[in-house]
Length: 111
Figure 1 (cartoon, helix red, strand yellow):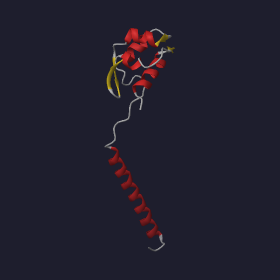
Figure 2 (cartoon, helix red, strand yellow):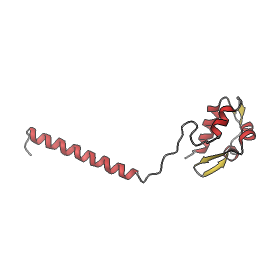
Figure 3 (cartoon, rainbow, N blue to C red):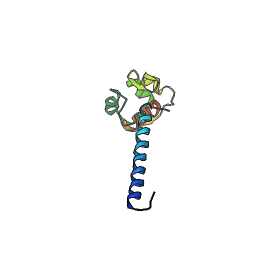
Figure 4 (cartoon, rainbow, N blue to C red):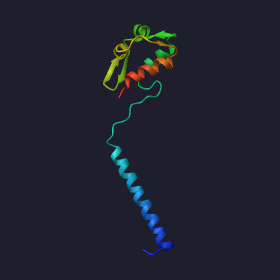
């Protein structure tokens, strides 16, 4: 191809077209991927989120289980009670709802 303006424009257009095709192919491939776990505060905790906000702090793991252990939350393995999610941890102290929520979500969305 000649090294003139028309040839350079065609080459640039071809490069852009190939890039768009690659992006479309990658997007099509991603449609088969599972959705990522949601880690935003309160997401996936259902009614437990409001209960954590209303709970008195500081608190411990044992106190959370006593107050809210029967509440169900969604995990990667399905729905579990808060007591099931926290049973594998030692008793910890939480200074705020966000602190407790972060720990619960860390256990809930382990990869």
